[in-house]
Image 1 (cartoon, one colour):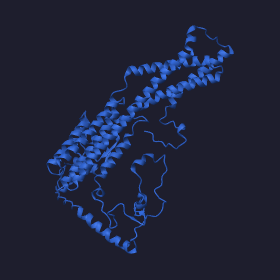
Image 2 (cartoon, one colour; image 1 turned 135 degrees about the horizontal axis):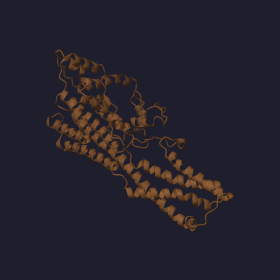
Image 3 (cartoon, rainbow, N blue to C red; image 1 turned 90 degrees about the horizontal axis):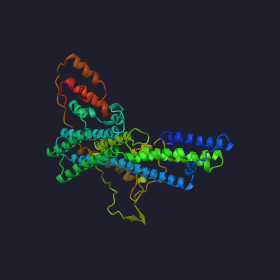
Image 4 (tube, rainbow, N blue to C red; image 1 turned 180 degrees about the vertical axis):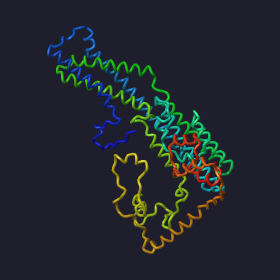
Length: 475
């Protein structure tokens, strides 16, 4: 998808993703043909036909009715294409949002789980990996229906990053690779993991809330089915065939009409060019946007969408999300409190600039980083201080920070000690293969196709390679 700025003045010069090249390729020859035809008729190089068919074609009333019919069909087709485009993008966003919300709700109950830390981390790791991979596979299946070739290498969505897919065992990767319904397979695994975690007490979640989580996961799958419906079912063929025939007939008749209506051969070519260019541009726009899932320039940006999904899932596993905000000693109990007629409601940016650290922009705005200039430094006024703030209160700030750190340490749980491993000897060829794979650094996000191929070929997961050398069982 092309991201543009509404304030830029060079959009007319863009060729990438534009429909102008195709429209010009049809309209320019028609305009030149009309100019030459009018020039030959004016100079007497060709004899103008007097057949009654020409008079009927160049009749103003007949041409007006025909042009209005073609315009009505194109406008209706444009509106339907835009509805399909908007519904498809909305369904894709709804799919991601429901799955992220379900994961966030589960993370809230995982935070105070009474189960072992190792079991909690494994449950959270499975959930994040399954949702990330399911989202990537859903985008890949939507794209597969629009790519003529059936090879997985030609599907760009298969090269999207997913959250640590090599964390799964090889048998699981083989099941995913051989499945013809990958989304449903991963969805079933996700539901089983959630239900099993609730039954085993890994997440102490009330049954009504668990029902809401399951409904969110199901609604995400419903939005995927809606996107699949838009991709799988095209606009009816008879309507498309009729539009194509009328547009072709319009391109043939336009030069004849302009030759009869316009006296100057230059203006005849220009007016014919404008009419054909308009019709062709509207047609190409409808073709571009009627299916938002694919690999075209104006299609849905699945790679950025998948990266955003991974960022949201990674946020739920960070330590900063587990630390709850605390109120400072200056927190007000009455929000309508005023001092001298001045309210203590302050701009957010003033308050953020009163503390240390960088003020980072939203990650969603990074899509427009090449089009919009932005600054991370704010040049506004100072933050408003409370009347009782003085130098002594600044000294007490260090005590509050130390107190916050001590409270944060209390919230964390000591990780379980690693079990001792025993050395064992392996066959030389097995040891060589494991050492070759172990020198690769572990990656948190990897290409889905590459990891599935590695699992299908029997490669050892890099995160378990060192443990295998020491004698641990690969799980």
